[in-house]
Length: 289
Length: 224
Image 1 (spheres, rainbow over the protein chains, first blue to last red):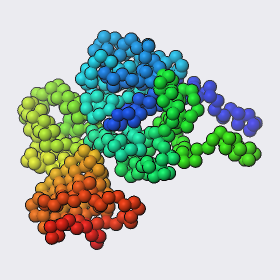
Image 2: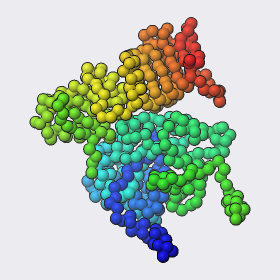
Image 3: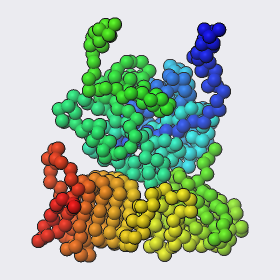
Image 4: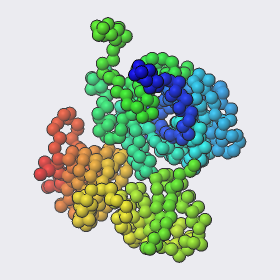
């Protein structure tokens, strides 16, 4: 008797999937921003969107960097752009027409930015209205913010339920992140959560780079994840295949962990100090047997 | 569904306009819209603005005042927990009163704020790009981060790490002092004297320090 009861209680992946379709969706809108340029907003948006979609969530990534469209390139969807964000706002097309479906992962969509317009083509209210339309159909809306603190940043942050601040372990980037957190707090949109990107454990060990503690000491907000500096990220962005879609590099794993934390699960932080090689892992595995 | 950012309700003391979280521009738009809808109903009303933790400067409060005046309503009070908001409201000659809802801050801190008189108490970390200016004393319960600026006519006390720029004693430099649990300001200006923190010499023991002017120099010593 007990033996069978045990089997029935086991949740199969099939059950979970069925259950999820019953839930009425109300998307969490997250804006990824940094203040400083070149710290990895677009890369993070692409990788987190792909990782969340791979987990079975319905995700739409929005490129809010109007005039400097990048997210479509990084996601490898550039040649499929027909309509864009500004077209939706101007009423040229319906929101569904501007959404590019990523054929590689089910449930992943992109709304690209316009390349021929500028930030003033959209207002914060337009962005709020647009995101509200998406709430019922998605689990997550990720907005890739432009650098800076002007109109484009305001547009990107206005609809956010949660703001993710990304920084690198560099004094200038941390300073800008601090400014951004101050602006977000003044708008009552919470202090946000932090991703530290492009960390070089070897440089920290030598004392040539500021450490995670130093960054947290100044910014004093919750840490969502630490992503190590990784060459494979450059190759993957150039090829238009987000690292979380294919490779098993440390950076890819770090982004996947961030995605898992976003869904509310706890994942231990990667121990970047003692990165083991495959052989070391293998020998450890055998010695543990 | 757009979020509700403004709520208007009537009480025996007049109307209370509660401003919730969200982008300031959209708050203003929603307020204008709500006033428009029920203009005749609100006409001639006295309004207390409840802003919660939001920081508003004098200009922003004035904008709301003008908006209300367009509908023949008068703004008489601003309720908010941030001391900057309160100071801004006072500078416009408006009443400030503590929020009617449950106090967010512990009673001890509240007592400190009221007993200090001409002291502006800030209960949060001042981040890069944020500026606080006050003719009296300033007490910061939190850090002052690099890129933040604190300017006081009197003293500045920071219950946290002071790494931003501080300027004190414009009125009486002889008496002015700056205290912090960790004193490492980007610039420290007392009256007309300027100094910088000594270069970062690594893992030194961190002690609370007090800086003041003495014989034409800025001196820092242990804060006891």
